[in-house]
Image 1 (spheres, rainbow, N blue to C red):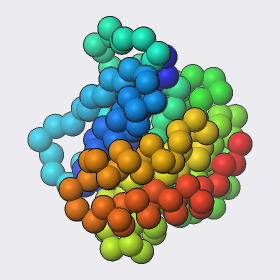
Image 2: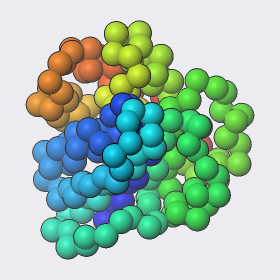
Image 3: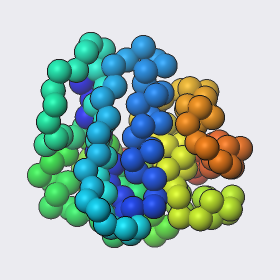
Image 4: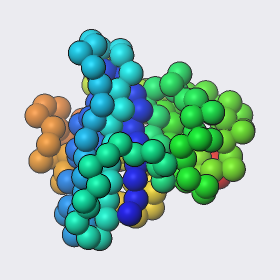
Amino acid sequence: MTETKFIGRGGQGAVIASQILAKVFFMMGKYPQCFSVFGGERRGAPVASFLRVDDKKILLKCEIKRADEMVYMAPDLVDEKEIEATLKPGGLILINNALTNNEFKPLRKFRLALVDALSISEGLGMGATINTAILGAYARANGGVPMEYLEQAIRDTVPAKVEQNVAAAKRAYERTLVVS
């Protein structure tokens, strides 16, 4: 079983990102389980969304405590202590980040990937909603998510700016820096 945690802020699309990725894994014949944790806060408040994927039905109904992958949609929410405590050894960290990879040197013992999803989304007129860009980066960093499935899941899910969202995923896939 692979367990992925998305960490972001309200309005960035963390919940929708995990739902789109769940659809991708379902298309691949896997069993996904997706759920989110957030309060009644407004845009900008921290949000966590979780995704489990397995080859067989998932019976667990609890929060993910030790993730295989962590996707940070807001770089200011990256917490090295949390990562050390909750990411499995050799796990993947994907960070939406416009800074250099030197900012995250202590995290290189994990698989680390960086993408400036915000500039990609803004460049396509989508503002701060970076969910499809981060998923393109995830496909590149994970290595096991076919882009054609991701494109189809985006087309099936997003209600507006469909072509911009598909373009964001493709651009992020191309621009993702896999550091370690």
